[in-house]
Image (tube, rainbow, N blue to C red; front, side, top):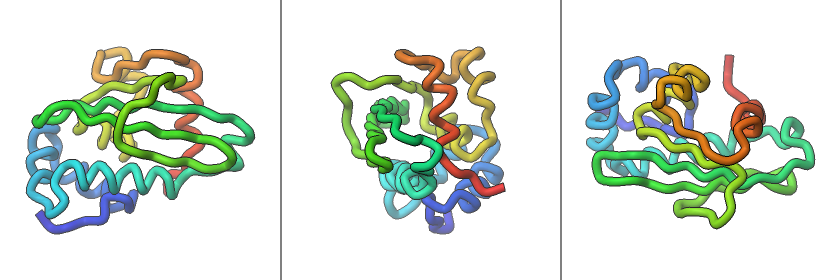
Length: 145
């Protein structure tokens, strides 16, 4: 696989478009220099960069991501407060919402190639906690047209 900057939204979209199946997508990413973990780290860096403090306003939240990978689950905690978005590996004690899905479906969701509501209704996306917040906080991130 050609090395791509997974924090670059257009590069992520192009990669997802090139691999229609989740298994093929994950296999391609595992072959990159940073492996799957490094790739997903870059995706979260891109999310941090696309965070819009104006859209979040004064709201604060902790979002827990649980991603299923071939090598086992990966946990990420996103903390939004004081106009900033921070992400770290690991779990949070009291997240406002927890999101669970496969890493392939997560990448498709972030790339705009998987409808969140449809994924939820079909069981590809599991959400616990504040369901209304889960629907609204995604609007706090800018996506190129």
